[in-house]
Amino acid sequence: MIRVFALVVILATIAVLILVVRSKLVGTAEDEPAVPNQPSPAKGLLMFLLTLPVLIAAVVAMARGLLMPMIGNAVGYGLLLGGAWLLWRGLVSEAVYARRLVAKTPWPLKTSGGVLIGLGTGLTAWLGVGHHPGIAFAFGVVALLGCRLFYGGDPVAPKRVTAASGLDTTDQVLAALAQAEHSIAAVEQSSRDIRQPELNQRLRRVAALAREILTLLEEDPRDLRRARKFLNVYLDGVQRVVEGYARTHARAASPDLDANFRRVLTSIEEVFNEQRRKLLESDIMDLDVQIEVLTSQLKREGLL
Amino acid sequence: MPEFPRKVLGLLLILAAVGVASWQALAVSCSSPAAAAETTRHAVPPR
Image (tube, rainbow over the protein chains, first blue to last red):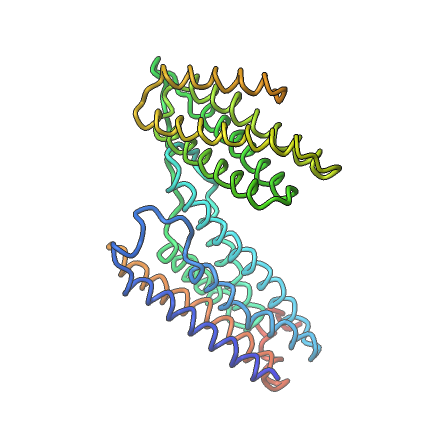
């Protein structure tokens, strides 16, 4: 049974190694986007697979009544697992940081993961294998160095933005963008409760447009007033409208309400499209007028 | 150091440290009781 386990782990490790090497050798500049959206899963899986034998060793040591190897392997595996998880979170956080144009310095997750991997490897080598503490320490240092070289360091500098007045508005822009993301997520969540494919499709389009507009605002966040107005009036309004409709729709079907909601969604979609176009043209004056028009319309419909 | 050699070297070091320690731990756990007793020699000093 153990041999089968070992064989499976070896094969899986080899497969991951092939994937990692292949992605480095075959991947060209044309294949990969300049800013990766997601980290390579093979890089994250590698550490989880490499450490699996320690878990099996801990179970076998327990079954055979070997106290020290069992403790060493169990604690070592816990540290290795924690390290592998932190490394994966670090890779995800790095991808998000690379994609964003405004960002705070992320937590040094990859460095913390590397330290845990080093500690886990050293402890396993000392108590699990029985190496001299000095040799076990060397194992830990080599593991730490390997993680540092393979996974790289954490981003250290924040991506800051300053307003036209020269003030640092990074925190305000990030807070506004986070609130907007929350509103879009709430719209998407509510749309799951609406069982009408046509409306769902419209809502998906509205959410996608809202994300595009956010990206445009993020690209040029110097005018936070404009961003705030869009986020507060538009997204907040859309969120309330969709949530309200989803609640009513769940209780009773009403053709009038459906038609009204469809009309509002069409307006929102049109105005969002217009917003995106105007943002691309940097026509701020016209944006404000559009916002006022939509606000009046939502109020007229009794939705704001 | 250029990115590609850095990553290859890092991968090799990870395999040499984490991979070797993991498989050695499994080998020791599955080995004979005498070998397993030897394992505790460095961890628990003799009285």
